[in-house]
Image 1 (spheres, rainbow, N blue to C red):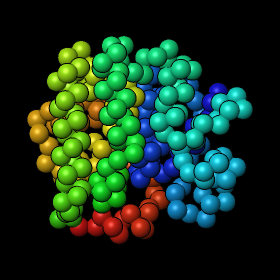
Image 2 (image 1 turned 60 degrees about the horizontal axis):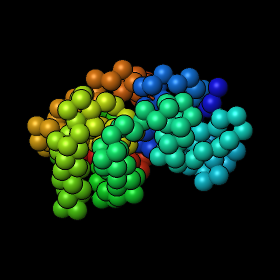
Image 3 (image 1 turned 180 degrees about the vertical axis):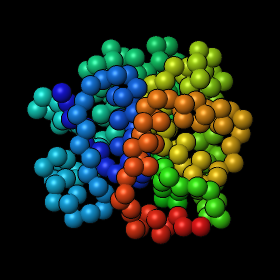
Length: 219
């Protein structure tokens, strides 16, 4: 079976993305978890990943690094194209949104890092992060309005674009981000996925922390 190397679940937003896609679609894989920001991670990651980052997928001698690249590989290798919408226009919008998530929203990612177990408190973010938050919700409204009629997700059925935005749901909930009705419904649909529930349960069982992240987001 392929092996997916991931980081600590509570913090590793990039690991969640391909893990969620594989698990949701029932693709069998072995999982190898490395605890972020530890000497053990530094000692071991080099034999798994050419970038020394997670996630990374190993499949029959092939090494695929980067979350979106792993999702694309899984889509071609196991999903027969089901990871993207069948409709050309929906597929183009979904890919553009996924790419924007992959390369953008730096203020949101930096100031509201994923912390699955976090509860809202007095911690707040600046205007740049709020602009990212507003843009995310705008994207969600546009995708749902144009292509979401067939289901609860951004383009109807769950796919790669939803896997790419799944960590944002944890961020919005954990930091108490104000959401419009569309965003709230979408986050609820993500949280109802069995794979998301599995990730959360495993995260809650983790005992490791991340001093840098924990200090940053302390209210």
